[in-house]
Length: 508
Picture 1 (cartoon, rainbow, N blue to C red):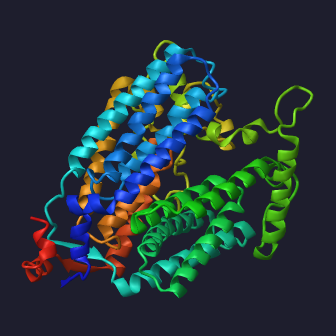
Picture 2: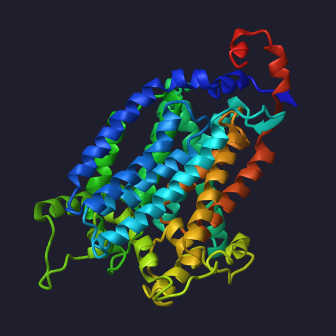
Picture 3: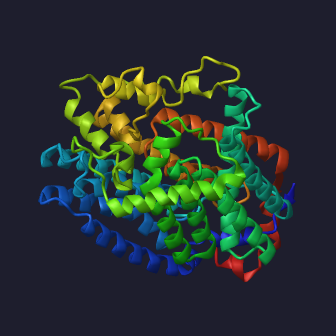
């Protein structure tokens, strides 16, 4: 085993005093973002219920607390749990005051009970997570990582392969059977998350030449364009979130202009998404799109969006919005607190607790579909929930999936005990994974596993089955590249060599 050249930088990266100095700009950006969130929440305020407003404020506080601990340097390592906690703003806090159509049907008392559940679980998970990350862990004896010279080429190749795969899927160039296609798709998607995060971090840290930087951002833009062209904007948004988080970690600053540009473009496309889906998903038009047709495809899409803005909301004769599900706002789509409200209002008075039924299927999800053609769907747990609460029939689950989220699923299975157990598991899991990845470079297997967890943490609508299946598949891919492409490095040699160095004296 050899010594990794950047281990001293990693030790400094996890030194509390150095971290606090490096994150000063991030802490300033944090307070600016908090101010903007408060202004936005005030802008979306459409309720007069003081109880609902107070509940939203309390959830907002606990959702921002881990991010504050991390930005202030009190929490070390990669921000897996802070990112997870931040998702609660859009999924639990804002829907309480934005007059969400599926939230306002419940009384303020129900809002209070659901909010207390969210806050207690989030607070408990924060406490457990913080116990793992408030101090640096002992140095690992060794770790596996990419060679620095080869990692950039490897990830750029993976990103280019992802662009090609998107064009392959969208263009209908199918010559692979369904089971093998699903396996390849899972591998490529998992690797692209790692590639985007790693390359964005390196670009933010200024470690690329101008030529490599241009190549990377061109590939990233192509990947987002080809992903969004499938009419699945949330996937493109997730890619951008992962890239932005990584760039912030590398540069210690907020890329304001790119955020404004991408958010504006995604918002514009969201408005015309319903018409595009109505025509190409549910209509008679062929929805396969070839690469040379992208300009016309997006031009048509933008045209529908501009028409939507001109007409605002088109009302049909029955008084309902056309394509109401697709026309709903982005805030309505990401909310999951209404599922928690549903579970708490019906369980156990109307329906019984599931007693872990959605969790018992997890072992079945690890078998690849090409080995088991009759394998259950990864969303099977979600379908069990929807059928149990009368939201769907079994036939309806073949065409539509209703997002529940981990917390509502936990309550539906075991009530408040399930929610408490979920908080303990997530807090300990994210905390241990963060601690395990400390003192290793981003291109190590340990840190890349933390990156995989960050990509899972932003999927707010996932049930445990989907989360487990995605994490398992990504982990298998990571294990494979760990032993095929990575080398083993020792830390002790570097520490001995730098023992008298002033940098390492700061760590004592």
